[in-house]
Length: 284
Length: 284
Image 1 (tube, rainbow over the protein chains, first blue to last red):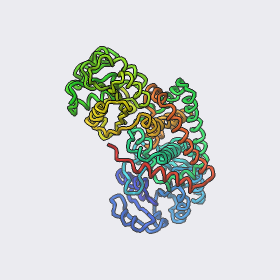
Image 2 (cartoon, one colour; image 1 turned 180 degrees about the horizontal axis):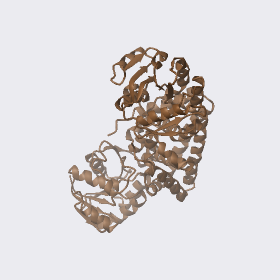
Image 3 (cartoon, chains in turn red, orange; image 1 turned 135 degrees about the horizontal axis):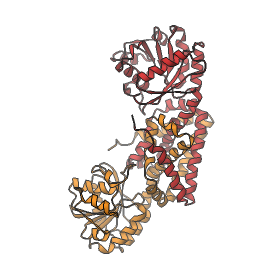
């Protein structure tokens, strides 16, 4: 058990960390910093928040583990800001959707102590905001942990244990490998859902009223926050562009088969898609 | 109330028609034909099946309304087969996902009586088979009804009333217009989900174990039956190819913005997608 867990800038994921940590007895004290005074006030009234602080530096004092839950473009700045206030063996992780640069610059921000270890739970929602957090968000979900070579093995172990304690299945891998994977299984689906919706809105928005379950499900994540996602796509631009090119080859292959009335090929492509999807693990 | 409803070749949708008709008291008698003897045997034991018949012609005798629930490539054949056995004012509809050719050839199959009226409920599942039917499948869902110019207005009215009685919201429109719409809101999402899965399986199938809710939802329909979908895509080939070209323009626009680091444009496209998705009606 951690004596003190500090969470910086909680949105849906950060608040879920606090709720899960409280529910599972992972931390004795949960201290939170949020930028806006009214958010701090509301957070201070939650049963899973022991105290709020007015500055990030103040909030990390005495913490055993700090979780930076800010959007990806603000994580490294926060790491730099709090570094001078950390106690000697404190460990810092984040929850950002991109890990290459954040893992390297986060490591540097700690002055090479090896105590910054990137993390990314594959859990979320099209919703945002700490009010939508849930203590069960991480149960049975993958959480990637992405140390760099110079990371302190004890810090890595602490972060791995923490996410396991929150109910996640931890997968440890290199930051760049992480970015390649999520470009494919998270960022590409987001771009497809958003582009499908943008395209349909240009054709005839009224058609959405006829939508069956298929369109509903394939586009649910298009309701996600564009500003958050812009920063994620920007941060993982190169990997995402590669994934997009690969996907377009696949799509153009099906399109060509359809144009040529090669229905054996069309069926083979649908079969490959089904074989892949049928082997998903049951939803947690 | 219909004295007799006949359902030919029920799968998931056809069985749902029978269950909904029984639950809502829409038909006094529900007679079913299925191709396989063991299916007829199993259907005959269901509380929503009054009788089964060994041939389609026998099954439609005395029916007020016949629902052809077969895959799209078999509908017109069945219509031709049963036409000689229909009573004078019997009306025939189908549940196929494509309507242009089926509406015209179905009309012809009835010898110009005007008593064939195409229908397409926007309800289904990635599952197949009559065992997966549900009496609530059509509640709050759109059902397209697609008469041709020569359709008998009384027959159209009968089909419209029938689907309303099953709980659907009926939208009447021209068959070709229907095909344009479903190419966009149903067939295109299917092709994207299948192609995304086919692409990911070629990259690294193991990544699926890390999938969050986003990938799960965007790809659920990739588990649909490839043989059924091949016939749907083939039947609606021209409209789908047009929709695919339009979608690719949209996707390449986002790709270009990302490549050019034009994040104002990236955000604008994500915003357009969200604005469209946020205005979906609540799920039925």
